[in-house]
Image (tube, rainbow, N blue to C red):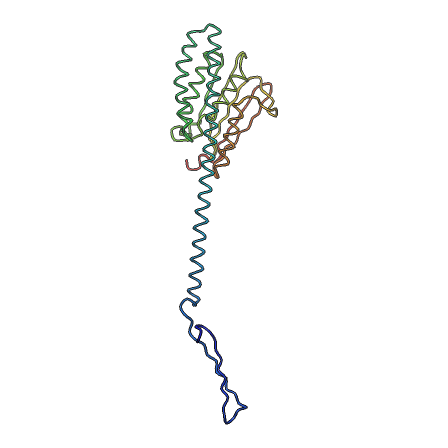
Length: 267
């Protein structure tokens, strides 16, 4: 039985001249599944199947990682809100202890509104800068009921606060720390928040003239740790946009710079 696509050799010995042997070589046409074009198509097909399976698996892994990151961030938000509530209740208690009943009532009314905004913000991955600024101003006004300090806010006019998205509540614990641990019981206390734009970066600079602290020492409070953890989690889940925080502090005060890198790339 002849095999398709095989080479054959036929040797013929003549009876009258046996020492002479004629050799004839020939081959048979290969079947369609033995053709080179078919082998190439099959190879491409299996390569395509492997690529699709690999892409599907990578997307599944990436989605699982994103869900894990979101879960961790929500957990941090759950820690952040009680931290904020605890500090606010401490302020209310301080006003009551000082027998400043009217201010305590004002604080409670403002605190209810601020808490609703805080809980709403914590459900979103990002929120526009305008909402964040309102929350910060609201919180500052409440704290000024108890603490005598001045607050200034400067926003670069090139920044569209209604369209620029940021991480919600990221600055809140830093401002709380500046008030509670920096300028508390200080005369002529000042806090300044500058929001600027440098190329594609959005920059927050929080400055106070408080007593400062050792930036190398382990911090016992939750606020600064929560901010650092949130920044770390975000940077792990984002490829293009990053957040960087730098702290400088001495006896003359503290400066915290939070830089949203490449945040305004499509602005």
